Image (cartoon, rainbow, N blue to C red; front, side, top):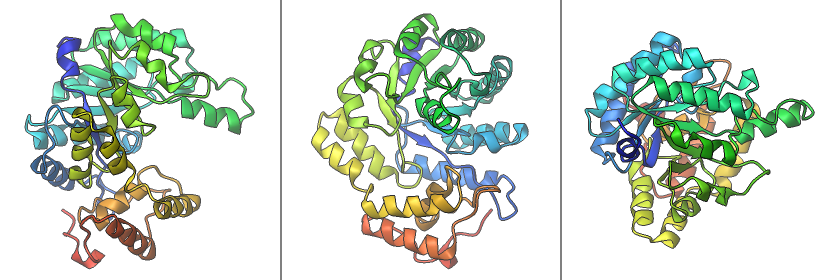
Length: 334
């Protein structure tokens, strides 16, 4: 497919799916299928969303190769052609990334979220060679995962030496990807070295998708979506935000976007994440209190305790969202 065709597919409030596990930490494909069918039933469609499976928030790097492929296949089946499917490929070298990209393409995915091979310590020319080779090898679209925050975190931890390029695709580098036909979208966030508005240099080439920085500003600048926080648990919230932005009603969209980002939620997140890491822990907790349990993360990340789930339930209830009252009311795991 050509870039102009793929850009019509990879846009909207991108839905980052969790990886469902049973009580023994085994991949639960039945639960994944049920979750995706529910999301489609609630209005996710081509043009307003993408089902993104096995990405960072979906614990893609923790999945075995056969689990990764089975998750992609499961989501493609559940989507039933009604909403595009994007598969995450995290931090692999160019050869292994291409292998996985071809597998995802064969399984029916129309897009890929690709993180650079950060532990190769890639320089900007390395990144260009990486994405050029991938683009030449496939027919589906790639969303480049720009991760400057990783560079900053590693530089801070290890004294700054040798880590400033990890995952940070400079604006000049992104512009040079214009000739890579299957590079379709940029998952956009910025380091302290350049301004958010630098996206204006390439927004006419690629779909720029905000990564939880400022989706309203991104859309005003010509961006075509954002990586949501809640689309996998309560689609009406993010679908309304997307509709408001598409209608140019930015003040209303901004109010709705910040509505669940309360001081109580920030305090809860800080407390829970100080005890145990894991990018999906709180998202999976929200799914549970909303009546869509997908299990805990795999060790060493800890599951939320009963008290933490109860506290989270009250936070979500105060947003005005429908919650289930207790774990006893949850559907049984498949």
